[in-house]
Length: 113
Image (tube, rainbow, N blue to C red; front, side, top):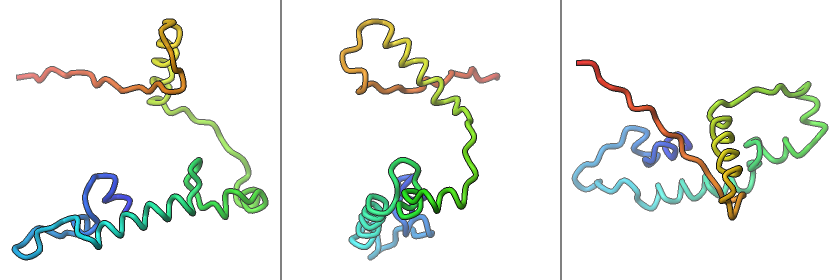
């Protein structure tokens, strides 16, 4: 269901449903209930920080029994966003620094004919 949600389609379309006469509504009551149930599950049982089940990730003994530590890696998209925010912050026009966000600018590629 998360996969379907991430691409903006219903679960039944994800499973192969196509509109037919008499069954032409993609987001029927059942589909809405599925998505609401997924949202409730994630809000109640998934940690908003790491995405793991709360009963696991909030139990230090369990976490230490499974993981020996953590490594640090760099997300270069986040790095690019951080640099943009830092540059904007240094411009002196920031009124609400915790409200800022970034949008990546794709490079325009010229098509070869």
